[in-house]
Image (cartoon, rainbow, N blue to C red; front, side, top):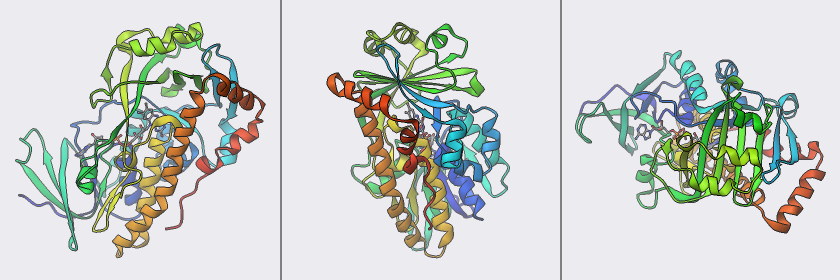
Length: 408
Ligand SMILES: Cc1cc2nc3c(=O)[nH]c(=O)nc-3n(C[C@H](O)[C@H](O)[C@H](O)COP(=O)(O)OP(=O)(O)OC[C@H]3O[C@@H](n4cnc5c(N)ncnc54)[C@H](O)[C@@H]3O)c2cc1C
């Protein structure tokens, strides 16, 4: 098998985690080779909320400038009752968020974030990106690591080459092959019982206008679903994502499927909300899978899983991409602090990250419980939310959005 010249860091996957890791390692003087299975980086996914804990890092890595031109700064997160669209609570964002948490709260299209990351990556001489390159597996030992990489349309196993390095970063997403190889048994992701229904509307579309969203992030709460809506693409489009219980679907970001379960879930809600469930093929469905927060993410000889590959979580706290960004930056910082004691650096990084990831995943579970409450629990929730001053609502997020990287 042909062997490439070595790179310090070998990254599998050019999603949010992999691209951020490439920049974070490059900024600390490492040379990086990044392999992406897809022949080109397609426009997949939909809206993402990027909270200050993530934008602070993107700013430091030089990505925010490009992103700001297409992102929206929402003035607030507004919680509303789906039954009658009544406002229950308003968490101020905008300048108040910046003053409190030291960085901006943005909403973007995932493709715009990926493009902004790629723009900055492509300006770095010490990062090589290869698309149409699938990481088939890796070896790790006292002498270093190596990945086997297959390019083009060759039959699996044929036409592969070996690329040696010091550290493999597994950023290959929720269906990570490197995670499966690390665990040997039990490395598959698990269907979490929920389906995410996504569609975008032109901002001036009557269905969007009917919801009176303003530029805020709006979350509509209901026992059978919740729906989140916010502007993307510099305000030209509105991203809608609804979560219902459901059955698993094929492994595809954009599986088009009959939105009948969504229509049923939204049937007895306020008219403008029920109306958005129509639109057939305009909706895509995405099964929510989770993986691995309590399993190892490292091989001390030179593998670290990051982002969804390490710990895919439900999106109910809107933090999956943010955690991928935090993982990438902290991993680079821990490795840079002790490049000659890699095993120690990786173990310390994992020990520092796992409690945070568990807490964030727990916040997602809590949001799901509260947002889908019914009967007297929902009535109590509504009362508490309406009475809570804005400052207290913001304080609930200090630990999450005000986070600063730990010292390596
Ligand atoms: C409905 C929904 C809403 C969400 N909303 C938010 C939100 O508001 N805020 C937020 O922070 N997060 C949100 N998330 C979560 C967020 O989208 C993910 O956590 C994040 O995109 C994960 O990034 P990643 O880079 O780890 O994985 P991915 O984006 O999946 O990237 C993995 C990459 O690896 C490549 N790859 C796979 N296997 C190989 C291989 N063998 N060799 C080479 N390349 C390979 C893939 O092609 C892909 O490009 C949401 C998720 C969902 C489902």
